[in-house]
Amino acid sequence: MAESAEKTEAVATRKQIRDALLGKKHDALTEPLTLFDVEIELHQPSFESMLDARDEDSMKKRMIDMIIKYAYVPGTDDPVFEAADEATILQWPFGDDLYRLQMAITKMTGINIGEAEEELRADPLDD
Image (cartoon, rainbow, N blue to C red):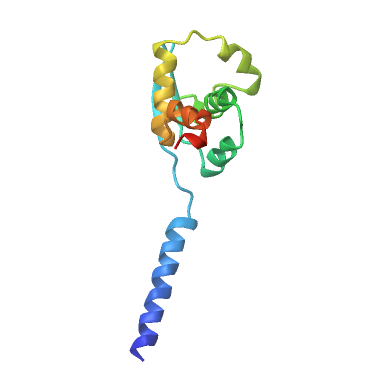
């Protein structure tokens, strides 16, 4: 009888865990950022988006996609950019603003873009 009670508690605990993880929408982190003297907000990408990004061979395309998909008007769910802006974004001067943008993306995703790029280029036989 005690074993049955333990199993019931385990099922209840499992249900509570599942309800907490799967039964609600989890809020993405946001990060305010000043880009060329304009305030924007980065939103944390979803797990699916991060997995999709791994399928993209081009580091350039991955970075541009992160900027286009996750830069928002502060305090809203309104994206700042659209796919048609890619060519213009690529012409921005690389300096402190884009470095801070890259660091903010790193913070939001937990992925160091520079290190990830080096790993992709590394020869697996060098280990």
